[in-house]
Amino acid sequence: MTSEYRHIPVLLSECLEQLALKPHHTFVDATLGGAGHSLEVAKLLGPEGHLIGIDQDDVARAAASERLMALPAETRPEISVVAGNFGDLDRLLVQEEIPGIDAILFDLGVSSVQIDTPARGFSFKENGPLDMRMDPSNQTITAAEIINTYNAADLARTIRHYSDEKWASRIADFVVEARKKAPITESEQLVEIIKAAVPASARRSGGHPAKRTFQALRIEVNGELNVLKRGLEAAIRWLNPGGRIAVISYHSLEDRIVKDLFREYSQGCTCPPDLPVCVCGNKPVLKVITRKPVLPTKEEIERNARSRSAKLRVAMRLDENA
Image (cartoon, rainbow, N blue to C red; front, side, top):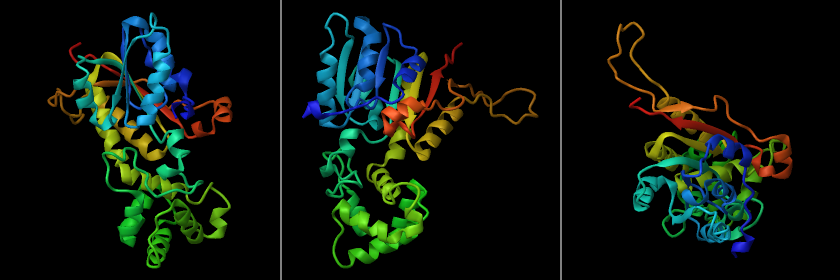
């Protein structure tokens, strides 16, 4: 099964350049996946470095371990593949007994293997149970439960808030009406309901009509935005001075959280401008390296269509004692 885990790393050369890795560094891949990024990072770290890969997916960890351990023993860094979610980064890094980290990468979104496995329920292109849990062993609520139990107002709010879906209220109304006849348990059922709810004129542009609703359900099921903020804040705390944090996001909600957090942590004095001296004592914790997000090239998008919406933002931890 591990051989089937496909992972094309997005913005790979840009990440390697921006992370400014050195052979002795401790690097954390917070979203290990199939180790697409980590495999190349490992070659830069060498035997003096330490690579910690985190993923909650059993298949991903197995595939990543196999690929990383296939590197020549005399040149590969110390490798730790850890089961977990980056929202629990504090606990996971304490568990690894390291004093700090020099670089960390978050490659957000759903991996190809999750999207392409119908049984996981993430895809609107293949029929499967409406599950969408990233970690079924630790999560209870599924997309089917949301679809079948939320009232129309809450369902519309969820779809609109997490996807900017113009037809959120109409979709919610159609869902509530459809589930009166029978529970909605399969992705194919939900796709047909969404198609019926979205006017034909709107279906002719903007991609698949179910794309936004499925994104919203996935975010709601996994609490992705809260987990992201918690993980980013922990990562910043663990960075050594000069260490870098790189985040690849795939939709505006994620990118906004990253952008706002980097701005917040890079802000110094917040005193009113008319005060003669600073009394707040605030010092910037980060320096934003990428004033504008790094985007994939046309060539990369042609090679990997899933990179189309990717945005890379990078910041560096400052020495607060300097």
